[in-house]
Image 1: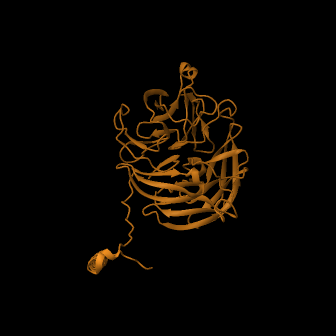
Image 2: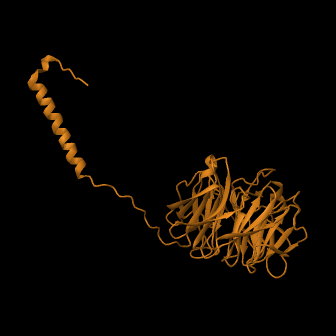
Image 3: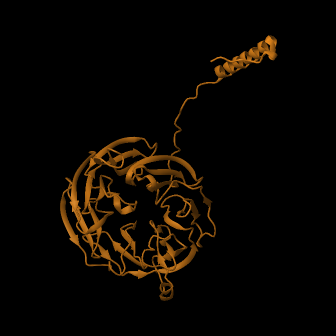
Length: 395
């Protein structure tokens, strides 16, 4: 490239211009030489405690690339993230040392050959440990507790399948291999029994509860079926549960609470009771959300997200209010701000804290449950997390 300069600049001016340029270039070279090379490092996570949160986010705008966000629930600080693939479901081992992810990958991202896996990570550092091949039947849906569970002794992983025919894959955690598949026709969800590690139950489309025993090879050993405990046409139950001791709690679309004892030879059903008075039901108050209720084990209190003007299809609406019940007396003891909750969870160890996921802005609110009266304001409110988060879990 040739530069031309007007003659009127003169040779002296041109020489000064060139010298100035050389000086600037030399200064830049010295500055560049003084900059140290930046070294990439990985910060070690702080030891986990009872306030560490795991936020499941299927990233529905690009669902092949789901995430599990790890958050400090005290400081509301982001700690790390795991990729969960296409519509992955997650669960922590009962000793809280391991994170399991049951997920799907396609060879061409959103198409092609399908591979289903259980991925295993350490919870202390979120480092990948190994993977286990499972049948390409893993259910692909929004996270809920009944889609992936560990057995009571942490030896088996139970994976819900849907093709749409339903079954459960049994995975041997220590042997790192798929064992077998239990058909569960017409029934859905994995509800592990707390005192019988080789038994789980499923909720059936005709209102019954099925129970299945499996042997050491992952094959069906025995099964049983209860009488109907709800009417699926008039008042179906949400496929979300809480388990406190051996007592399973389910809630129906119209606010019936079903409590089931999972111990002994067969499930025992308590008489269902209602969250609503007749006048509240008439005004259309109903429970709603994804992870729509939580139980405080210290006080035996049930917290439920509620919305008014309920109708067909509003069962996932965020909470306008959170209603609080005494599980022993079945009486409501408080009404709280709803925080537009779609998910909630209460700590079972450490400080009594409730964490609520706001479905309108992706913020997490923490609430102090130490007092007898429900908190009037939050302890903390986070910045928005994730893209389309749906479920909370605690360490």
